[in-house]
Image 1: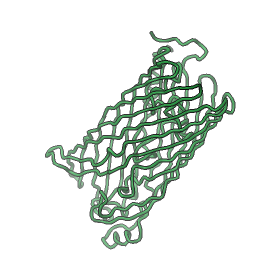
Image 2: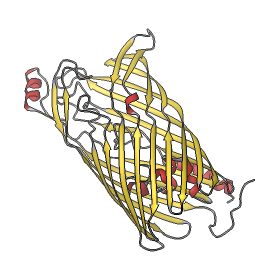
Image 3: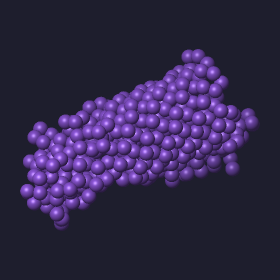
Image 4: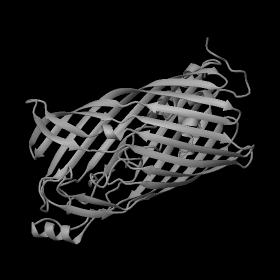
Length: 430
């Protein structure tokens, strides 16, 4: 099989491995689990190449660190737990009003996130690549009948990204990269029309395909030191769908949503032949997601609104790698994430809060072509209140006060394969 045929095969496999839906594990409904190797470091230094080929998700310039024709894929299992427990006053109020006085049960849904990256080196300066992944998504599903059902039943966001990229190695210390994001977004939100048992749903559904871009650069100021900076742009979506206020009634609606841009800075510092230290910081412009008007397409008048009122999100991480021998590498990391969702706006759909990441991982090089990665992470999420009272953007006249203590376990496995022969001179395209 020649190189173009191999590349076509890799791209087809890359697309086929993407498309599952799962709960959000980064801030709000963002997903960070795009790399099995990166997970083992709590994603420290991923924009400086610590995630291997999959670092291209954060910084497209990192594909210049991978010679030849390569493919990398990972599958991540996320198992979260989160129960919203109303206080006694809320349960009593719901009971007195004829509602269902019980908690949410576990609202989180376990899921699988695949991600793939393919890259080909054209010559000593240019690389082409493609990433396919799911950067945004979540599913929460409490008990069908519960005390907070007028504020949320089923909530789902699904996205699918394909990002072709090009990278240029300017010299031995500087590489640049850029790409185009093509993103499909699908949203489904349901809540009860009343507080009673068996109350019908009010549903909002819509989808859209939007376009954005990615930019990145890597600097190697000294041997063993890599600094990486990556930027993922905001993507504008004009969701087209329907509002179902009651059974048998469907109102065509549209909503304009601007998803946040993401800036990631990473550092990789080799200490000696065995040890490498890594660090990272990531900023997500969640504050742009304030109020989303949902407009009736027929009349042009407001039908409802989604009120987020988020702060910006921040993620900080540190990690280390230890090379046991030429085949085995061990790694570990710690991260801390500042959620964009404050106590003042937290709701029952995305009960997100600040969290501590802890992770371990390993890589095993089977031969010069094939290697495997495995990682595990546990997320300690800060206990957080849900206070939907007067002044809360979702308040509709029924006070709802509750507490939650979420957590999550994440397991990721990945593989990397180099299709050309590493021992042969690179057959470049001219």
